[in-house]
Structures are given as structure tokens and as C-alpha cells.
Amino acid sequence: MSWNQPPPYPPLLPPSRPGWTRMRVIVPSAIGLFFLGVIVGSAGSSDNAEISGTAKPTVAATAKSTPPATATTDAAVEPAPTDTKAPTTKPTPTKPTVAPADAKPANPDTAKVPNFVGMVLQTAQDTAQAEGFFFLASHDSLGASRMQVLDRNWKVCTQNVAPGKTVSVDTKLDFGTVKLEESCP
Image (tube, rainbow, N blue to C red; front, top):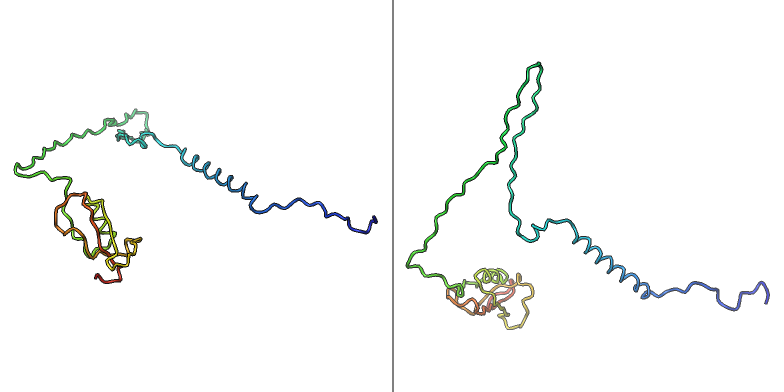
């Protein structure tokens, strides 16, 4: 072997690591840092009374402060008396409300069905839920079997229960809908 010839073996270089092996270190580290941030963020100082919802309001009595008296002569000046009492409030008496004898108590299990025709589907659903109806469905009135994914892009053309009818709140309300730019069939 001569000194001017390259060695018969390749030079020793550190082996290069493929990209997926670096991910075995980065991903767990990122997940660990995320959970560490969640733990540190949730461990902030908070008052237990605020969390439990049993906080009672407190009224702090403040005393009126008087500025210090400055005397220019040898005569003693007495400071003005301060009022340290908290103002007291008297509770206002409330009259009990009496229902008329002929009034029937409203049945909480029934409600009057509003007229939903012409409303945007999202508004119709919100109105139905405000009235107590939570079993709601909608379908494409044109028969194209399209799903109403974004309710704000659909309007109500028909409803399965007549408006003004008083029914159980467990009744299924089904809205026949079309896209806003389409006309009702």
C-alpha cells in the first residue's frame, strides 16, 4: 500500500439517521411539553369559593378619612369625628303573588308549536328549543337527500306539526328544508 492511494474502505462518518427516527424523540417531547403546559396553566391561583359557586357577597364598610390637620399656632386642633358605621339597608317587603282561582296551571309537558315556515333552519331549531322541543329533525324538501350540515344555509318550507297546535314537548318536529337560494316546492 502506498501513501498516495486512498484507503480501500470508506471513511468512518457518523451514520445518518432517517427522518422517522428523529420523530421518535420529537413527538413524545412535544406531547410531554403540552401536558406540562396544561398542568401549569390549570394550577393557577384561584379562590375555592369562586369555583364551587358558594361565594357569598361581602360588603366592606369604609371609613371616611379626613386629611391631617395642620396647626400653624400652638393651639391644639381636634380632628373631625369619622363615621365608621356601614350604612344599613332595610329589606323591602314583598307581596306574595296569588294566582286567580279560575286559572289552570300550565302543563310543563306540553307546548304550543310556533310557525317555523320561512325561518332559517338554525333560527327555527333555536326557537323550537326555547319552546321546550328538543326532538328535532330536518330533511331536504326537494328529495335530493342532501344533508343539512350548515343549518344557516337552509330555510324551512314545511313542518310536520301544524302551527298553533298544543302538543307534548316529546313530539318529534320535522322540518322540510331547501337551500336559501332555492324556492320551496
